[in-house]
Structure formats: C-alpha cells, structure tokens
Image (cartoon, rainbow, N blue to C red; front, side, top):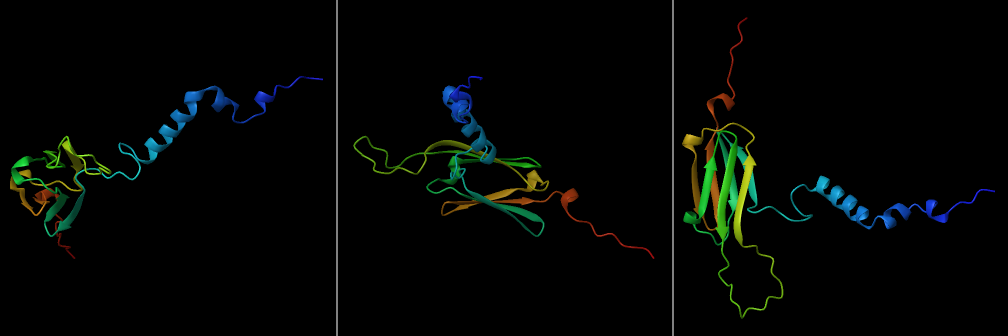
Length: 149
C-alpha cells in the first residue's frame, strides 16, 4: 500500500508553503482590472471630454487652484495637464480625523479621440473648473462627397 502525504491532497498547500505567492497573485489580478490606480480611486484631475461641433471640449475639476498654477500642453493627439496643489490649511497643530483631499504635484495626460489643431487651442478657468477648447484638425473633420450618377 502506497503512503500518501496529506499535504499533496490539500489544495491550499502550495499557497501556504509559498507565503508571498497569494499576495503576488492578488496584486496581479487587481493590476489587470485597475491598471495604474487603486480600486475606487479616481485620477486627478477628474475630467470629461466631449465633441461640440468642430471642437473637442475637455473640462477638468481643479478646485482651489489659480489659472497661473496650471500648465497645459497640447499635441495633435494628447492633452497634458500639470500643476501642484498646495494645502491651504496645512498646520502642524492640526490633528486630522479624516484626510481625503490630495496635495502635491500632479500630471494627467490623456489621448484625445481625434486629431486637433494645437495652434488654435484655448483654455479658461472659472470657479475651479478648467475648460479647454480644442478645434479638430481639418483631416479629422468629416467631408461631404458628392455622388455622380
């Protein structure tokens, strides 16, 4: 009669013997689901992108920031928003119970859905909302073709 070791019959034995394996597998699983960020975390600044006629509009939430603290870079296919948020209420005597607002430098680059004319881009900043207007490049605009019959 063959002698069978109980450890080989236990499906958890490989995971328990290699203590880091379970952690590595869980990290790999969540990286594939939410690449580059933690579950439930929203990238800063939160933004919306939509088309309006011949323009792409990007609206980004930048509460507490001034227009001169924001740096924009536009190419035909990418928009980059860069800046640094400072904590106005940062004092050593403060004892926080909850701190969800993030401070420090940030960079957010997004790939635009269509090519734009970067030379004609414009931006405005009102009440903590940055609005960037990006005219679509001529080659990105639909062209009407007449049909000969």
